[in-house]
Amino acid sequence: IATDLTDDEEAQEQEQEKKSDTEERPDFYQIVGEEISQSPGPLAIASCAHGSMVDDVRKAVVDFLGTSPYRVELFEQMQNM
Image (cartoon, helix red, strand yellow):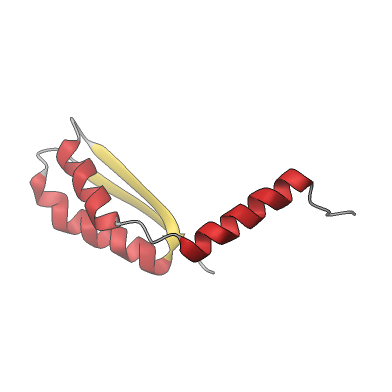
């Protein structure tokens, strides 16, 4: 079975590798806080990431939970990398 990448796929992979090396980690605390405070109703938050990122999202949800009059649920899955 051949597994060669097309030129487009290879370019996308190289671009993603560059981003991984240069991009900063998202500020999950700020993102979650804004989403919870601006939600017009019940909110479900899903996270699927490396364990430490899932931990960051969980902490933010816990910290901002009391700021919303609506139900907020967290669904998480950790990836082993």
